[in-house]
Length: 347
Image: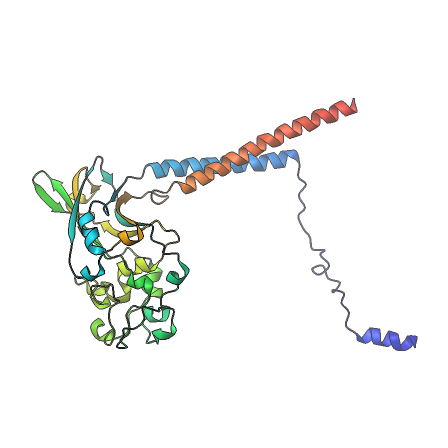
């Protein structure tokens, strides 16, 4: 009987791990001995580094020149016109004057900003067809684009989805008022999107021209032009690889955000940037915001080595550095207090 049990035990697989250094957790390891010197050194080194980085980032951010103008209130007549969706085909223009008190030297970027527009809504974020945006012939009825998929007659929308349908479509031009003359500031509308978006994530359908490539499709309901006519001046900036379209399709995580709209072309008298003086924005007002109590801004800004005007990173480094340094001093105080008690007990 005992022999039979011993034979069965030998045939059953053992649950014990192999007697190897890895499975027995006997690999060589570094086991630091934490002393008061090493602990304090790590805290103070971390604190000095974070404080230095934070101060540098804050000083860099403060050197950014930026001006922001809310034009949704100043263009109130156009805003009222856009409240009625039946007026979508009626053009409305407004002008906003402002003054630059200081020169904006270097590269100057123009952004449009939206407030209280929730691009991070779950159904809004998924309302697109990535296969369609790659130029493939797909059945968009099987995508998440609904209800912006097809019209009642069955004609598919190109592009489909709520993100594309709600594209920002205001047109903003900048003019420099020099003495009695008005000079239009040259703006660059290409080269503003991410390289991966332009060359990897978005593609136009293959055809000998774009109009034939998008034959049998229709523009989204809120668009004024079909997708192959977004830029009538530059044929290479049309379709799904249009820069304005690419930037809009990269949705924001917050309800208040800004997107790059144009860059100032550094030519002629704007070679060094924007000189101080009086300027005017000429705006073709198309994007309605009053229904969701939103605001629209146009922003002119320079950039530095750390990016644009965003003090968050500098403040975060400064707070972390301050906390690490204060923790180091607290540890010193506790160590001295405990050492006094130890000395008193020994006596």
